[in-house]
Structure formats: C-alpha cells, structure tokens
Length: 315
Image (cartoon, rainbow, N blue to C red):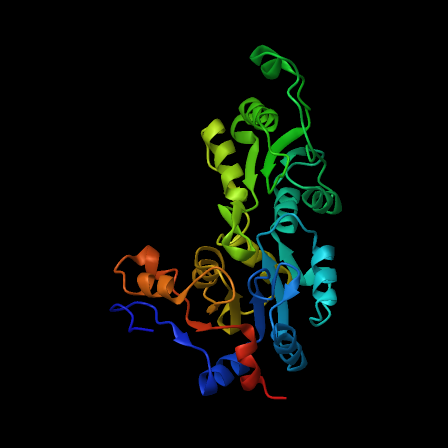
C-alpha cells in the first residue's frame, strides 16, 4: 500500500513478525461472517483451521453480523456445519439479537414492536420477551386510501423495527407510518442495519435492509436508531457480555463502511480480508484522501484471506 496521507491511518499486509505480534497481543477477535469466514454455503479455504488455532491459543472468538435473517442459534449451527470451532449462541451478535436487546431495554413493560422483518427477527424478539407483530406478508385493508388510513392499530405498539423483509410492501410501509404518527417521538424507530446492497456470487446483488429503513425514514420524516455496524451499539453488546478490552481486540471484516468503520470508531485493531466485497484499490483511494470521514474507513491491516494468518499461528 502507498504511504498514508499525513496524519492518516496506514494499511499494511499482516504477515510475518507483525502478524505474530498482533495476534499474540490480542485477547479477542470479532469476525464478520459472510465474505470473511464463508461465502454462501462454502467456508473460505483455511478459515476454519485459522480459527481453530486461535481458539487453541486461548483467544476469545465472537461473531458480529448485520444479517437479521438468522438467529444466533442458526449461526452456531452453520459454524459447526462448516467445521469452525464450537460456538455458543452467546458468542454471536447478530443485528436481530442486538435489536431485540435494545428494545427490551428501551420499551416500557408490555409495550410491543411492529416488525418489518423475518421470522428470525421475530424469534429473537420472542426470546428477549418483547411482544411483536408484523413478520410475514401483509395486505392492504381495503381498496381505497381512506381504508388504509383508518384500519385498527394495536394499542400496545410503541416501536417500529425494520430489518431484512422479503415481504416488504406498501401495506407494511403504511402501517409503519401510522404507528409512528400515532405515537410521535414516544414511538421508537429502530433499524437493524443500513447495508444498502447485499452482494451475491458472480457479481450479482440484491437490495439490502438499508433500502427498507430509508423508505420508512422517508415516509415518517425521521431518522432511525441503527443497532448494527458501524454503530457502536453492537460492540457495546459484546463488551457487556464479555468485558473485552478494545485495545486488545481485533475486528476482522470485509466491508469498510461497516466492519472497519465500527472497529476504528471503537478503538479496535482493524483487519480487512479481501475475500468479500472490498478491494485494495478502494482502500488506497480512502487512504490518499484528506477527508477525515474517508480516512476513518482505512483498516490497520489487510490479508488476502483469513488463511494467511495460519503461518503466524504455528501448528
């Protein structure tokens, strides 16, 4: 990598003695999942072996993902299926779990959430004891706008939660707006993440949760509180569970605007892997910029793959 702009962050390949020193000093590593540990249903070659050696060396491994369409239990099962070290649900911090945790703390007793999201998001809310309604398809309650604006609302709803929702519709957008208008500032608007596009194999992509959050924000004319990366709330959830030291924690991810930005904002060592969506050319563009916001997207280190850490971890 080229030298950073004056006073900016450097991005160096993590290898050799630098890798041994960084990994040796770390007590905990936080991993994004898709694009870092696996791509779709296939593990990144060597990733499971690298995490196995980290676990054997006594490092705490946690998994932080913006994906709200899987429960923590589903993630631990996928880690097991792909050969990664055994993990418990408490090691997984998905945006569905973190959103449920946030609402459990923020809502008064008995208050419910209207959810634009998946069954997994509903399951995490249920596990946290947060009443909810909304997952699944919805239809408009009549043929005319007057019908849509006058249909009964659940009196218990005090929050609107927006996650990834394959059944997102105009009917749901109408309901979300009506709950937010009825409750005013007392009705919370929460989003799981702002990822605007989800990359697929072969260069394809689908719209991400950020598109749905923006639609609700636009209709409601207010901004959502986002629990996922790069917001530090997700890291705060990890700290509250494991009391890890940011100065001895490495954030490993494949996206600059979520994984690396959260890590940099929270004082973690940041490691970019090139098995996901980000290229070195993107990093270089940010690194050479004089803009502080772009500088905040530059990681401390990069590797081509998590498997590149194997030599520094020994046998």
